[in-house]
Length: 208
Image 1: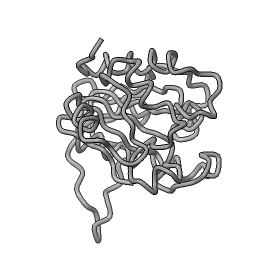
Image 2: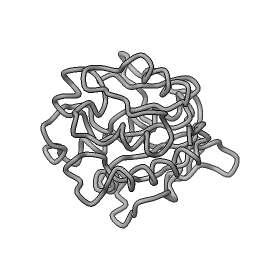
Image 3: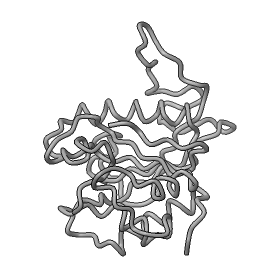
């Protein structure tokens, strides 16, 4: 599943992992029952609900790119359900996301799924909303031996707790509800409110 990384990148949404439908069409949150794109429209991040069920329509992709809205996942493996992943896949995915932050410098990283966020970060008491954690931008990440990306679990300029040094640019981190239709605690409207807060923090131009 290729990452969506517009330039400049203001807001990076991080899902848990691709579903089988998304993997088949090569588009994030592509299943028709997923509420990600309705929530973006409710938040004012897009002007309309993007139909990504068969790939990104050009006008929808253009809106995401103009807003500087990117999308990635903690784990790259496609599964029927996110609970098929093991904890180590989520922990390893966090290191990859840190590397993306160091390369592309988003203002905000929004993890969609509070349970997955708790596992990946080890913060068992994390609650929905903005987190104390910050991802330092640091230096650019280059390839390691044989093209393997360098270890970025401790970005240069960051303290051991993951917070950047006082003068280091950093990305704010949000942990927000997952838009899956299986998450019955949330509605499109409640998801939209949470996503809007992250978009405002990132400086994404909103449609309403």
